[in-house]
Length: 287
Image (cartoon, rainbow, N blue to C red):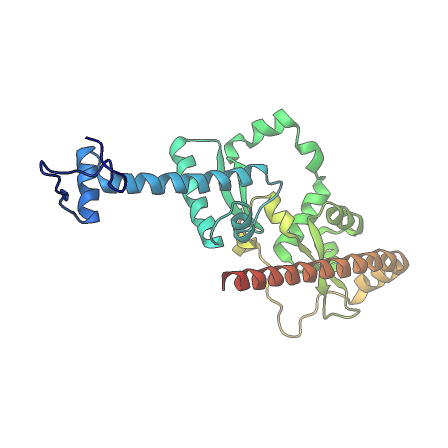
């Protein structure tokens, strides 16, 4: 029977028009009955929802790693993948690696000096080099590899020390390595004349898949030996005279390097200031 305006059409009524009230149940009880009727456990649904949410984050992080041209810090990963924090990015990287390992894929996320990078497994390196001919771009001569090895294991090191080990002046080789972004100036030595010190760059670690210098093969055995008190093995005798003969050319070379060092320091300071400002802004927004 139709009811007058003001009465609900869907409101249940008894035989004599009295209002019938349904037995009220707590929300939790209704929720349990709902899942029980559908033969679905509540915990399973909650876990499934969480899994979907985490999978979306994981997919975003993996996409960022795939398109990145170089290693990315946890902080940068978190920003680009829209994650809550750098620590969450690190946890998701670990989970992604477990998925890769379980599926026997050809890739793995490695942590190098500058952050995380998606790399192929070492066992595929030779085949990929032949396929893409990548060695042409980064191929180094034997002299360059020897000089790079000396710098890597004995850094920070002066040009005179490299010359004493190899027996030839490494000025051209050092310039080549610096042009490739593998070696840079690391300051001045306290020896006579305050010669420049050379060290490897983060790109060197990234290129060779190293997290830090401790990952170098036989790092403990080949590391720089400690200097004995009163022991001076550079900048004296014939070696100093040989360096002075080429002083005019060397000064021009090292003046150019000094300018590059100043530019690098300025860039690093600017990056640090930008990061600090970004962190301050993020903290203010969170508050």
